[in-house]
Length: 294
Image 1: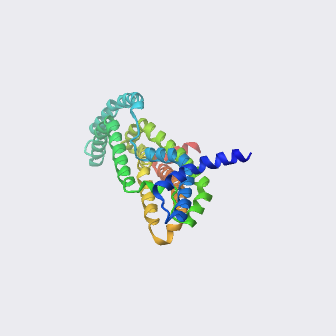
Image 2: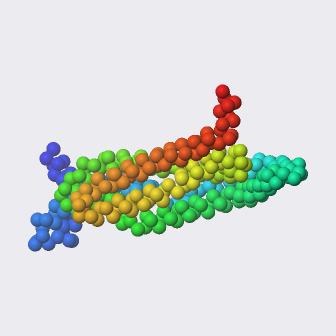
Image 3: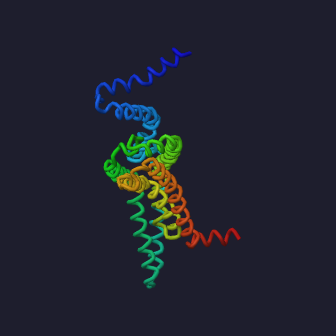
């Protein structure tokens, strides 16, 4: 039993002794060995954090792949394009029967203008969506590059910070796991959003259905640019940690930052849907549906 304990201790302290031989001298041996021991402990703790941190960064900054849904996008475009001719005929018919009514002629012109814009935006929706994704990704990556990558790892700064990091290491890992799950859901929403984006644009240019188009577009834009807002939160947290008051509470700031990221994802999604839904209810189409339901 004693031999087994000695063997385990030898394995644990071998890297420390080796490091001490390289970096520690006789003059600082008393402080250097404990420092190396703490660093060794944090290296073990940081090991399971690294995959989650890498995945989090990739989910935040890497462009979402939408090519897998290009076939479905093409089918949606084909179905929507069937209505172009019908809308053009409808606009032309309204213009012909408008007579001397300036209001009716203006309404017919508005319909024609909306149909032309609809055709242009719907047909180019895939490329517009790709540009927006690239813009969001570039902006987010630029912010994340301003953050020291050591900010996300547990470090040996002082005894207080080390103790808090040991205590809060598990909550930090669980918070990162939740962040990865939510960001993965966001990735899936943005990826499939390329199918719904042309539908939203199609509805937006039809006056009775405009509120439904706003609902789709607003939700997709918020989900798309959410990582940029979250990267700003992480940048702010990394700057807060530089203040003398908060230097001893790094792990608390990190856990709080990722908690706010998770909370913002849920709240902003809810806000976007609630706001757009209120617009739908207040619209003429929404009122008509409500009357029919009664």
